[in-house]
Image 1 (spheres, rainbow, N blue to C red):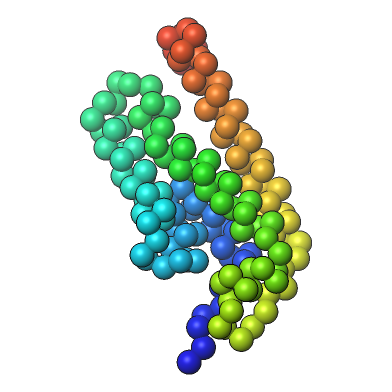
Image 2 (cartoon, rainbow, N blue to C red):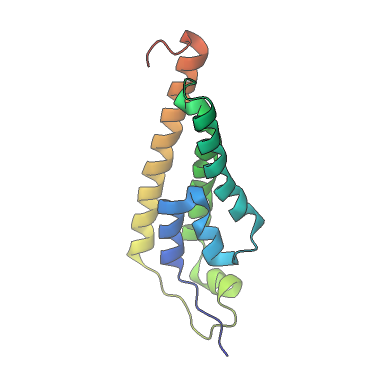
Length: 138
């Protein structure tokens, strides 16, 4: 029986869209992946912080999720920039198929860069606002 073929483009798309919840890691490693569960726990932990202290700034309540999403951006870069040969050796050694990715992965990497840079700048700007002005600007 052949193992399933892991699609690099789909894994990068999952990392881009649902990486903060660890879905890309569950797709690649299965449900026993500890870092995937840490990503998933960050969603629940942020929701619990938000429910417990709704008056605190949103960035502070959602800090675990923000960190998880930024880590997922880095993981998505690792997925997308890996060569097809290395990808197949790592995830598709027993599938009997080879990967041939092209422009869709490159476009996902551009979107990932825009997403990660925007999130990083927002987090930094809001952090400095909270630290230096006590949140005067929002």
